Image (tube, rainbow, N blue to C red; front, side, top):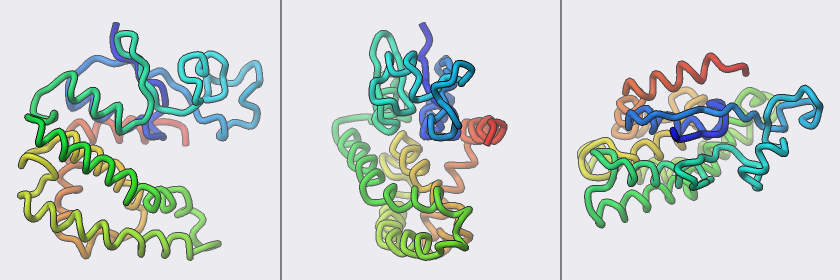
Length: 217
Protein backbone atom coordinates (compact mmCIF):
# COMPACT_ATOMS: atom_id res chain seq x y z
CA UNK A 1 0.00 0.00 0.00
CA UNK A 2 1.30 3.48 -0.78
CA UNK A 3 2.20 5.90 1.95
CA UNK A 4 -0.83 7.88 3.17
CA UNK A 5 -0.30 11.50 4.18
CA UNK A 6 -3.26 12.96 6.06
CA UNK A 7 -3.61 16.72 5.82
CA UNK A 8 -3.69 19.57 3.37
CA UNK A 9 -0.79 21.47 1.89
CA UNK A 10 -1.86 24.61 3.73
CA UNK A 11 -0.54 22.94 6.85
CA UNK A 12 2.69 21.31 7.99
CA UNK A 13 1.80 18.40 5.70
CA UNK A 14 3.61 20.45 3.05
CA UNK A 15 6.87 19.25 4.63
CA UNK A 16 6.00 15.61 4.15
CA UNK A 17 4.73 16.05 0.61
CA UNK A 18 7.90 17.93 -0.36
CA UNK A 19 10.04 15.13 1.03
CA UNK A 20 7.97 12.41 -0.66
CA UNK A 21 8.43 14.22 -3.96
CA UNK A 22 12.17 14.53 -3.36
CA UNK A 23 12.38 10.81 -2.63
CA UNK A 24 10.18 9.87 -5.59
CA UNK A 25 8.01 7.60 -3.46
CA UNK A 26 4.33 7.04 -4.23
CA UNK A 27 1.91 8.53 -1.74
CA UNK A 28 -1.76 9.28 -1.31
CA UNK A 29 -2.66 12.68 0.10
CA UNK A 30 -5.84 12.26 2.15
CA UNK A 31 -7.34 15.76 2.49
CA UNK A 32 -8.02 16.54 6.15
CA UNK A 33 -8.80 20.18 6.86
CA UNK A 34 -8.24 21.90 10.19
CA UNK A 35 -11.49 21.96 12.18
CA UNK A 36 -11.01 25.62 13.14
CA UNK A 37 -11.39 26.59 9.48
CA UNK A 38 -14.98 25.27 9.39
CA UNK A 39 -18.10 26.94 10.75
CA UNK A 40 -19.40 23.58 11.98
CA UNK A 41 -16.87 20.75 11.74
CA UNK A 42 -19.47 18.28 13.05
CA UNK A 43 -22.07 19.08 10.39
CA UNK A 44 -23.28 16.15 8.32
CA UNK A 45 -21.88 17.69 5.14
CA UNK A 46 -18.61 18.85 6.67
CA UNK A 47 -15.47 17.68 4.87
CA UNK A 48 -13.08 15.32 6.61
CA UNK A 49 -11.43 17.43 9.28
CA UNK A 50 -9.30 17.17 12.40
CA UNK A 51 -12.42 16.74 14.58
CA UNK A 52 -14.03 14.07 12.38
CA UNK A 53 -14.47 10.68 14.08
CA UNK A 54 -13.01 9.00 11.00
CA UNK A 55 -9.78 10.99 11.33
CA UNK A 56 -9.65 10.70 15.12
CA UNK A 57 -9.75 6.94 14.68
CA UNK A 58 -6.44 7.27 12.83
CA UNK A 59 -4.91 10.00 14.96
CA UNK A 60 -6.57 10.58 18.35
CA UNK A 61 -4.47 13.74 18.75
CA UNK A 62 -6.64 15.37 16.09
CA UNK A 63 -3.67 17.07 14.42
CA UNK A 64 -2.33 17.16 10.89
CA UNK A 65 -0.22 15.90 9.38
CA UNK A 66 0.00 12.25 10.20
CA UNK A 67 0.96 9.31 8.06
CA UNK A 68 0.13 5.65 7.71
CA UNK A 69 2.95 3.57 6.30
CA UNK A 70 2.88 -0.22 6.32
CA UNK A 71 0.69 -0.19 9.42
CA UNK A 72 2.75 2.44 11.22
CA UNK A 73 0.99 5.67 12.21
CA UNK A 74 3.24 8.65 12.88
CA UNK A 75 2.53 12.25 13.79
CA UNK A 76 4.78 15.34 14.02
CA UNK A 77 5.80 16.56 10.58
CA UNK A 78 9.52 16.86 11.24
CA UNK A 79 9.74 13.41 12.84
CA UNK A 80 7.81 11.97 9.89
CA UNK A 81 10.44 13.38 7.54
CA UNK A 82 13.29 11.89 9.57
CA UNK A 83 11.56 8.51 9.41
CA UNK A 84 10.87 8.66 5.67
CA UNK A 85 14.41 9.73 4.86
CA UNK A 86 15.90 6.96 6.94
CA UNK A 87 13.54 4.33 5.50
CA UNK A 88 14.13 5.22 1.87
CA UNK A 89 17.79 6.19 2.11
CA UNK A 90 19.64 7.94 -0.68
CA UNK A 91 21.49 11.25 -0.48
CA UNK A 92 18.76 12.95 1.56
CA UNK A 93 19.26 10.51 4.43
CA UNK A 94 22.10 10.59 6.97
CA UNK A 95 25.09 8.65 5.66
CA UNK A 96 26.34 7.58 9.09
CA UNK A 97 25.73 7.97 12.81
CA UNK A 98 27.48 11.35 12.89
CA UNK A 99 25.19 12.75 10.20
CA UNK A 100 22.19 11.21 11.93
CA UNK A 101 23.06 13.09 15.11
CA UNK A 102 23.55 16.36 13.24
CA UNK A 103 20.28 15.90 11.35
CA UNK A 104 18.37 15.33 14.58
CA UNK A 105 20.14 18.29 16.17
CA UNK A 106 19.24 20.74 13.41
CA UNK A 107 15.67 19.44 13.22
CA UNK A 108 15.10 19.88 16.95
CA UNK A 109 16.88 23.23 16.83
CA UNK A 110 14.52 24.42 14.11
CA UNK A 111 11.50 23.31 16.12
CA UNK A 112 12.62 24.90 19.39
CA UNK A 113 14.69 27.94 18.42
CA UNK A 114 12.95 29.12 15.25
CA UNK A 115 9.42 27.79 14.82
CA UNK A 116 7.86 29.39 17.93
CA UNK A 117 8.77 32.76 16.40
CA UNK A 118 8.39 32.06 12.68
CA UNK A 119 4.90 30.64 13.15
CA UNK A 120 3.82 33.89 14.83
CA UNK A 121 4.81 35.69 11.67
CA UNK A 122 2.87 33.47 9.28
CA UNK A 123 -0.23 33.48 11.51
CA UNK A 124 -0.28 37.23 12.18
CA UNK A 125 1.27 38.91 9.16
CA UNK A 126 -2.02 39.58 7.36
CA UNK A 127 -3.24 41.41 10.49
CA UNK A 128 0.05 43.15 11.22
CA UNK A 129 -1.33 46.67 11.10
CA UNK A 130 -3.62 45.91 14.04
CA UNK A 131 -0.80 44.58 16.19
CA UNK A 132 2.59 45.24 14.59
CA UNK A 133 4.37 44.40 17.82
CA UNK A 134 3.82 40.67 17.29
CA UNK A 135 5.75 40.71 14.03
CA UNK A 136 8.49 43.00 15.33
CA UNK A 137 9.03 40.84 18.41
CA UNK A 138 9.14 37.63 16.36
CA UNK A 139 11.65 39.05 13.88
CA UNK A 140 13.84 40.31 16.72
CA UNK A 141 13.76 36.87 18.36
CA UNK A 142 14.87 35.23 15.11
CA UNK A 143 17.98 37.38 14.64
CA UNK A 144 20.19 35.27 16.87
CA UNK A 145 19.19 31.85 15.45
CA UNK A 146 19.39 33.23 11.92
CA UNK A 147 22.92 34.40 12.64
CA UNK A 148 23.87 30.99 14.04
CA UNK A 149 22.50 29.16 11.01
CA UNK A 150 24.09 31.65 8.62
CA UNK A 151 27.52 30.97 10.11
CA UNK A 152 26.95 27.20 10.13
CA UNK A 153 25.98 27.25 6.46
CA UNK A 154 29.09 29.28 5.65
CA UNK A 155 31.31 26.83 7.52
CA UNK A 156 29.65 23.76 6.00
CA UNK A 157 29.74 24.89 2.40
CA UNK A 158 26.11 25.87 2.02
CA UNK A 159 24.28 22.92 3.59
CA UNK A 160 23.41 21.94 7.14
CA UNK A 161 24.83 18.41 7.03
CA UNK A 162 27.26 16.52 4.83
CA UNK A 163 27.89 19.16 2.17
CA UNK A 164 24.74 18.19 0.24
CA UNK A 165 20.99 18.76 0.35
CA UNK A 166 19.48 16.48 3.01
CA UNK A 167 16.36 16.12 5.10
CA UNK A 168 18.02 18.46 7.60
CA UNK A 169 17.96 21.28 5.01
CA UNK A 170 14.37 20.49 4.08
CA UNK A 171 13.17 20.53 7.70
CA UNK A 172 15.01 23.77 8.41
CA UNK A 173 13.79 25.44 5.23
CA UNK A 174 10.16 24.60 5.92
CA UNK A 175 10.33 26.05 9.43
CA UNK A 176 12.03 29.21 8.18
CA UNK A 177 9.53 29.59 5.33
CA UNK A 178 7.03 30.83 7.90
CA UNK A 179 9.15 33.97 8.35
CA UNK A 180 9.19 34.83 4.65
CA UNK A 181 6.12 37.08 4.61
CA UNK A 182 8.37 39.76 6.14
CA UNK A 183 10.14 41.50 3.23
CA UNK A 184 13.90 41.18 3.42
CA UNK A 185 13.83 39.03 6.54
CA UNK A 186 16.93 37.12 5.38
CA UNK A 187 18.83 40.05 3.85
CA UNK A 188 21.31 40.37 6.73
CA UNK A 189 22.24 36.69 6.46
CA UNK A 190 23.75 36.11 3.00
CA UNK A 191 24.54 32.42 3.43
CA UNK A 192 21.08 31.68 4.84
CA UNK A 193 19.43 33.70 2.08
CA UNK A 194 21.31 31.92 -0.69
CA UNK A 195 20.64 28.55 0.93
CA UNK A 196 16.87 28.97 1.28
CA UNK A 197 16.63 30.30 -2.26
CA UNK A 198 18.45 27.18 -3.47
CA UNK A 199 16.20 24.92 -1.40
CA UNK A 200 13.09 26.55 -2.81
CA UNK A 201 14.39 26.36 -6.37
CA UNK A 202 14.37 22.57 -6.21
CA UNK A 203 11.79 21.00 -8.56
CA UNK A 204 10.12 19.02 -5.76
CA UNK A 205 9.57 22.17 -3.69
CA UNK A 206 8.25 24.09 -6.66
CA UNK A 207 5.82 21.28 -7.47
CA UNK A 208 4.63 21.14 -3.85
CA UNK A 209 4.19 24.89 -3.51
CA UNK A 210 2.23 25.06 -6.79
CA UNK A 211 -0.14 22.40 -5.49
CA UNK A 212 -0.41 24.27 -2.21
CA UNK A 213 -1.28 27.50 -3.99
CA UNK A 214 -4.07 25.70 -5.85
CA UNK A 215 -5.77 24.66 -2.61
CA UNK A 216 -8.64 26.74 -1.22
CA UNK A 217 -7.35 29.42 1.17
